[in-house]
Amino acid sequence: MNIHEYQGKEILKKYGVRIQEGIVAETAEAAVEAAKKLNQQTGTEWYVVKAQIHAGGRGKGGGVKLAKNLDEVKDLAGKIIGMNLVTKQTGPEGKHVHKVLISQDVYYPGESKPKEYYMSILLDRNTSKNLIIASTEGGMEIEEVAEHTPEKIIKEWVDPRVGLQGFQARKIAFKLGVEGEAFKEMVNFIQALYKAYEETDSAMFEINPVLKTSDNKILAVDAKVNLDDNALYRHKDLAALRDLNEEDPLEVEASNSGLNYVKLDGNVGCMVNGAGLAMATMDIIKLSGGEPANFLDVGGGANAQTVEAGFRIILKDPNVKAILINIFGGIVRCDRVANGVVEAYKKIGDIKVPIIVRLQGTNAEEGAKIIEESGLKVFSAIVLKDAAAKVKEVLSK
Image: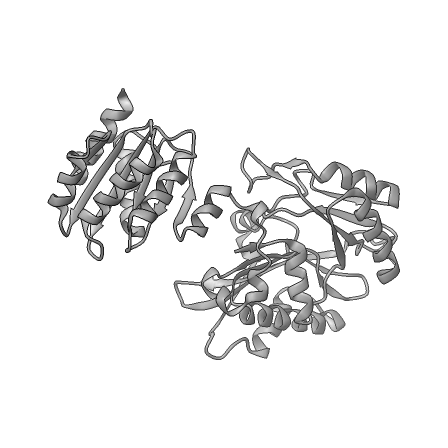
């Protein structure tokens, strides 16, 4: 689960990570009040207005602006709130901005160019260890740094059984080239950041940039945090940070129905039980000349209710020209799924797109018979090859 920058910074602050202070606002007027409060708290007279969306590259898209007085805060916040912000990570459709973060200016007057670093922590599945990635090239996309100057990428693996050791934090700080008081600050920053990552059960913490000020303070200017969905049951406070405005409405609806759904850009909707079979089904759709419109895993206990919920979600996508249901009857019996399909079809009614149902496994023949005798616009298939051929046939009409 992704969270906003301001939420990530609140987590970091709780763990002793020094941050660029800020206050979130949802209107231009609230942004001015936030700036006034921030001035009282930090003494800052310039303010950074940052769009809060779940995507990087906000600055290049026009979502991060510097305001030198309260009038500019109001003007810039008014322009950013409500805009459709397009970045590399949002895709061409962009994301609607609902709120901004009014942050203190941490780039001191007269300071030519403060030093910026990059730092992130994530799980390296190849080694089953946590990986700290750092670079002296902060403020840049880490992919570009890795491609053009790979020697500037620092990596340190941490065994989760023993945790981050002091010498490892010092080694990273040394490789980043910091000295004196800034060295101590960087070591403390790394240790606090790792503790925050580990204790919140996060999938990733990314701070870009990490700033070294002219008075040798180290602080997080940005925070991109991805929490592990599977661990949220242990963190009710973190689960409450979910922003449904940042998620696709169909994915939210699917989640509420207990379905694993990801919307794609194709024309063939698919409903499958099992993630592996879902991936194979998407390949079959591609080979048949179509494009998958979604990934939808109804799980091992597919029944009439889950099939109906899946139907409703898929049919809300106007690009869908056909639906392929591919069920392997292992835990679930194929005849029950077939009855669920027929029941859901009749309950929804007026389904204008053709539906291909491929059932294999326990009671597959009985399931196919139920589909064929239903009298509905539903086509039955036993093997994947037949299902692919039927998809191709219906798309060509």
